[in-house]
Amino acid sequence: MRYLALLWLVIGLSGCSLFSKDDGTEPMELVDFEPTVKIEQVWRRSIGSGQGDGYTRITPVVNGDTLYAADYQGELYALNRRTGKVQWTKALDITLSGGVGLGHEQLLLGTDEGEVLALNSEDGRELWRTQLSGEVMSVPTGDENIVAAQTLDGRLTVLNATNGEVLWFYDNPPPKLTLRGRPSPVITNAAVYAGFSSGRLMAFNPQNGLILWEQRVAMPKGRSDLEKMVDIHASPLLRDGILYLSGYQGRLLAISRSNGRPLWAVDSSSYQEIGLFGDTLYLAKDNSAVAAYNAASGAELWRNELMLRRQLTGPAVLGDYAAVADEDGYVHFLNTSDGRFAARVRIDRSGVRVPLWSDGELLYVLANDGTLAAYAIAKH
Image 1 (cartoon, one colour):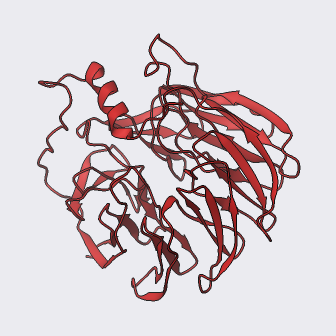
Image 2 (cartoon, helix red, strand yellow; image 1 turned 180 degrees about the vertical axis):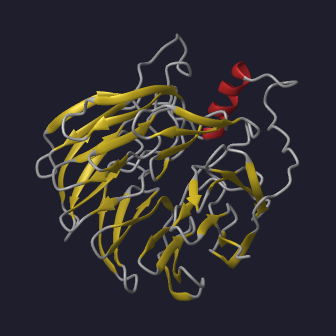
Image 3 (cartoon, helix red, strand yellow; image 1 turned 90 degrees about the horizontal axis):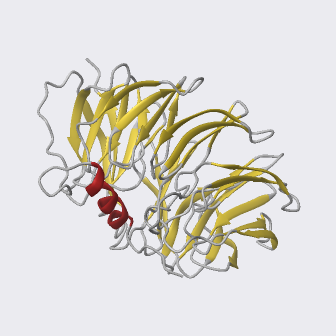
């Protein structure tokens, strides 16, 4: 089985044929603009050795007033999300591949050796660890009953949240060429929702793994393996009974969680996480255009194409601004009303590939070298 070692290779190749600028591969130069809002850095801290050289995305997570973050070498930090003050750290002596996930009073981690670890969220004490079938590429997720994770070989595995025992699994072997990474499953009392590199979103009975429904997000097209790639790389978003999902070389969809029927769909290709705030979806496309969509209808509200090929992260919303970060470490703030630039800051030259996260008060950005910073809109 051939897996794509670096996501950037695929995106770079696809960008060549779609957008030609000289040789068609260089990032678009940033335009100057007059800032309309001031962004201030509230705190800044180093998280170990960062993301490492491979295409890892060790995502941080916030639970209450605590932010949990880790580096690829398994150094785990619990921080006060408002001040950045370290509450505790723990050296796990493992190599992480799946970012920090949340279960019921648990932290969940995935390793490149195929293990899922559950830790006590209060002190990092290990509760259990379970060996899976391959490298854990998704952020493991869980509730009080189960934990779910996806591995690079296309398997979804569901574990007992108390002791890590394997309850059931589903195999969806990936195609010959695939993006490196897997979406995180979404768990509810009624179903486990998971997207696969075959371009399918599937719903499973959480107790026994029986398939409840499936919906295709994209159909493979073309002759080459690259043209046929239809990965679901972004995790599904669930709100008010509707699942929002985007696929690479596929579509952006709103799907009824009860039966899997599409409510609307628009052509769109993305490998980044979707942002949802209020009645608007925010999406960084595979060419690094940023677009906003009406969540009820799928109608495009605006598009910003002034950062093409800059390998943007998934967006997050802070106040009246949608933020994305790029491969050079710039964080761009766009007006949610029209997509125009409002502000720009730089966290670090190592760049950012982890999706941004906002709690409404602060925007959290984790650079590839491990620099973690919280930003806020400056008060007048």
